[in-house]
Image (cartoon, rainbow, N blue to C red; front, side, top):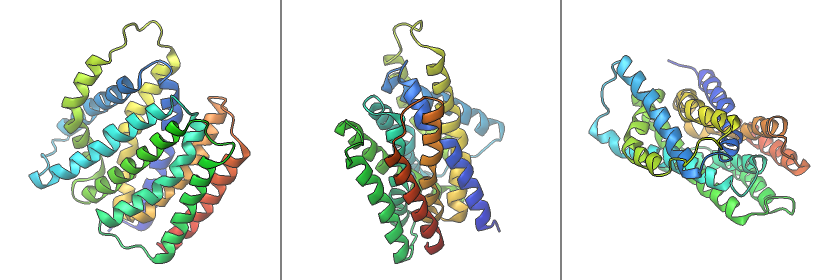
Length: 286
């Protein structure tokens, strides 16, 4: 039987990989439209998933798994990438990263609704405190100047939490990389036409940073990260390991500051530090 430590280790690797997602998306939307970026990353990742499924001769999911795979597709293949790409046209990646502090609470709620988990009452206290910290930051005077950007990020977090919880529950039977691979293939018939319709009229204006951003979100954010993340959630518990997502702002803010040279306000660091304290206690009390 796999240990809870293995679940936390896999979950942490997933968080580290996901930490580059929003900065990479911010760079990519500088050269591609939000719709093209969302569909292109899904198509590229789906081709990778199809190749792995074929090479390892994986059997098709059962019919009862179809509804769950559709939810995963809506949440993490289409919803979260599209909404964050739209949000990052209005706000900086540094600002958007702090919203990730809401993701553990969203995941925990759906872990109860969809995964059948029952965390202790004190767990909810610290989970809600961490989320309230994020909400307070978003409404602060040095937060985002764009309400639409903030609302898009909140919607993205809700859909992502649903996709995480649903995929993790399904991973207990199918396996983590199998779940994301089948979810990507399920979305492929929709994503291919969108790629064709949003194809850039000229490639000469797309710089190297945008291509690097597209490559990262396609390979790592959309496929490799889920291998570790779903495995960690399935082994260690969706609500419990999901609290690791509150560590992502630390990594993401560092990337936004050092690689993109975006301003990182003291309030961002203070908010992130407080949610890290919350995730520590939430983990112990889950």
